[in-house]
Structure formats: C-alpha cells, structure tokens
Amino acid sequence: MDKIFNYIDGQLVPSKSNKWIENVEPATGQTYSLIPDSDHEDVELAFSSAEEAFKEWSQKPVQERSDIMLKISSLIEENKAFLAEAESRDNGKPVGLAKTIDIPRAASNMKFFATGILHYASESHQLNDVAINYTLRKPIGVVGCISPWNLPLYLFTWKIAPALAAGNTVVAKPSEITPMTAFLFSEICIEAGLPKGVLNIVHGYGPKVGAPITEHKGIKAISFTGGTKTGEQIAKVAAPMFKKLSLELGGKNPNIIFDDCNFDKAVSTSVLSSFANQGQICLCGSRIFVQEKIYEKFKAEFVKKVQNLTIGDPKNKDTKIGALVSKDHIEKVQSYIELAKQEGGTILTGGKIVSIEGRCKKGYFLEPTVIEGLSYDCRTNQEEIFGPVVTLNTFQTEDEVLMYANSTPYGLSSTVWTENITKANRMSKALDAGIVWVNCWLVRDLRTPFGGVKNSGVGREGGFNAFNFFTEQTNVCISY
Ligand code: TXE
Image (cartoon, rainbow, N blue to C red):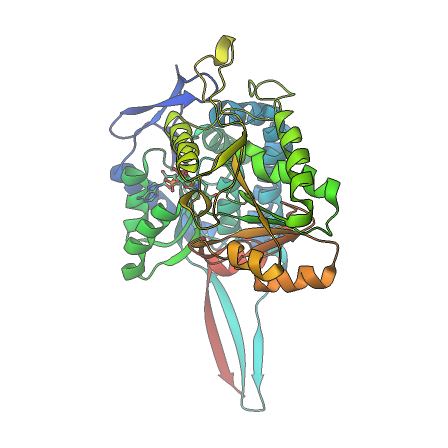
C-alpha cells in the first residue's frame, strides 16, 4: 500500500503520531494509499520550519524566488501525464479533464505568479510641496493555505504560488480526500531546489490539521477554499485574532438563457457548465433559467446532449462523467435528488446510481441529472448540491429572472446568454455575483479578480489581488 508523507522542513515525513488515514479511489471504492493522520504537533513543526525559512526567503531577490517557482512550473509540465493520472485516480475525474484543465492550470498558476511578482509595484503620493508618500509592500510572514478536493492541485497551487512569490512562507493543507498530487508536488518542490521550510504540507483531517493552522498565533493570514460552513468556522476563529482572511466558498450559480441567445452555443456550453468535473466545481451553473419562448426547444436539445454523455471509468479517455469524489458525497448528492422529488420536481433524465462492470463495480457513479418543475425558492434551488444535478426553470422577463437569480444566499458566478450587449451589461451589473460570464463559461484570465459575494466568500484571488492579500502595506511619508 503506497504511503504519502508530510513535507516539513524540506523532508518527507510521517505524522508524529505515525497514524494513517485510508485514501480511497473513488472509481473503485477501494483504499489505494495511506496518508498521514497529522495533528497540531505536526502543524507546530511545520510552523517552526516556515518561521525560520521566512528570514531568508523574504529577503531573497524577487528574481531568485521567481526562478525557483518557474522551475517548479516546468517540472509540473514535464510530469503532466503522470500527475494527471494521479489526479484522476485520487479525485475520480476523467483523466482527460485532469490532463487538459487541472494539471496545465497548476503549472500556469506557478508561472503566472512567478512572473507577475516581477511586475508588481506599489504607489507614491505627492502632497503638494509638503511631503512625498511611498507605500511599502512587505510579505506577511508565515501564511496558511487550505484547499478542497474538487480541483486538488489546481486550487492548491492557486493559493501557494502568490504567497511564495510575495516572499511569505507557507503551511499548507490539501483535502484529506484528495491528497495525492499535493504529495507529488512536494517531491517536485524538492527537485526544484525550493529551500527547506519555505513550503510545508501537512496532511490530515480538517479539525485536526486545518483548525490548528487557523488557530495558530504565528500564522497571520489564512487563504481558504471549501464549503461555506467550514468558511464560517474559520472566520469565527480567525476574526478575534485579526488575521487576514481570503474565503472562496460555495455557490449556487444561475445560468440565464434569453431567447435572443446563440442557441447552439448556449446548449453545448450549458452541458459543460452543468456537468464538468461531475458538477463538482463551485462555478458550475446548477440553476438553468430559460426564457419562455425557447424553453421547450432548449429542454429537448439539452436533455438529448446530457443523455449522450459517456459515464465511465475515469481512466478511459472517452469518459466525460467520472466518479463522484467519495461515498459520503454521492450520498449527499443523492439525498438532494430525493429532496427534489419531494419538492415537486420532475426528473427529466438521470437521478440513478450507475453500476459499471469490472474494476469500477464499487465506484461512486451517478447519472447526470436534470430536474424541472421546482419553485425558484425551494431548498433544491437554494442550497449547494455540488454534484451532477441541475434544475431547469422558465421565465418571462428580465426582472423576474433577476429576482430568481439573486434569491439565494450565494453570489459566486453567473452566466448570461444573449446577443444583446446592452441587456448583457444591464444584467451583469444587477446580478449578485463576483464573476459574470456572458456567452461563455469558465473562460479564465488569471489577472482578473476571482471570488464571490454574500455566502460565497470574502476577498478576491487572482492577479495583483492575490499579491495585495499576501502582503502588508506601510505608508512612508517624508517631508520635503
Ligand atoms: O469542503 P470542506 P469539502 C463545497 C461543496 C462541498 C462542501 C464540502 O458544497 O460539498 O463544500 O466540501 C479543511 N478548519 N465545496 O468537504 O469541508 C478540509 O480538510 C480548517 C465548494 O471539500 O470545507 C479541506 O482541506 N480547515 C468548494 C478544506 O478545509 C478545515 C470546493 C475544505 O474542506 C476545517 C469544495 C476546519 N474546521 C467544496 N474543516 C469551492 N468553493 O470550490 C475542514 N477543513
């Protein structure tokens, strides 16, 4: 049985307790590796090493930090196929998705922030002939990065890269459900010559490892992506400690389709925005609102395409729908399908567990599911399901669909399909969302602000927003 290790002080080590957690392959339901069952003692070791490493790393010339990060990026690219297979095995996602999205984006994250830091400047303000002000931007110190299981290496590096580039050192915690690529990433960091203690990765359960990171007096900022409930817990702990917080939480994103849309593109993209990664992306458009005139036509076309999605072994290159990430999660998603029926929904397609012969017999497979006939304000349409389940609702006017779209406690992203640019701009301004895609989905420019409003989070990642988060400012005012 493969064991993976913590990465602390430049070494790959078991937890101090030498206890292990079973890591299950979603496609087979079988344990295939063991991860360290770490706790606060391992977090303390990681922190001490990070604190020591900060002295040198924060003073290192930016170009040198950048060069090491670029080396890490190129090693990710060199190992793309192996990392993609590992990601697919650990998460259950199709290997094709890991190869085209997850791993390339992890390499891009490292490269983007390694180069971005070379162009990151601050400001000065001249007060007439009285004084000149300049703003210093300094690394914070030891920061905490906690990431989820849906896009494991993609989101893990999305947090770590700007933190390191800005001169901080990191205590990071990947999800215990998908730890593998974070472990492989630590081996890449060692090979790239990242100095010991600059990055420390502690594996284990949220309450035993994530919470000690959040509670640690020496860890001055927390960057977290995960569930809104957990985000709430983290905020409760961190707020009275006055830590900087970046929280990327859940979503219940509206996909709004007007009758003047590019119909074919709206349908095909909606299949992706509904079911990519088995619907386990916080940006998925899980509530589809279609203007009345084209509702029946859209429904027929959309359902037909969904029924043609290949559900299968994530190892197969033709698989479009792989396994859901865990037994607990597929049961949670199934419970929402049952709830939808109780709330009066009609299952147009899907809703059933899929049994796949061979090695995947005991895997966690669920048909992509489309449900119509629910009210906009029922639980199924208000709560994040985070699986291959979408609802279809119709609307007549802009005001009506805007009310539906903004009715949930979330506000992460939205998609708007219309060929009328004035309407698109009007909708984008009125939607409660951190991101609005018009006539597209998941088109990502890493320079742009990334994050949500309401219960979808606090703060923005991406571009210089990330550097602003991972630095502290001092304004220096010098009289003439
Ligand atoms: O997230 P968790 P999970 C949503 C989605 C999903 C739900 C739970 O609805 O069903 O969140 O998913 C660590 N202090 N999203 O279980 O529990 C935990 O170990 C500190 C949306 O992944 O929030 C893991 O490393 N850390 C999201 C990380 O937090 C704690 C993507 C996320 O775990 C902790 C994934 C604690 N008390 C899920 N408890 C998105 N926005 O993309 C847990 N953790």
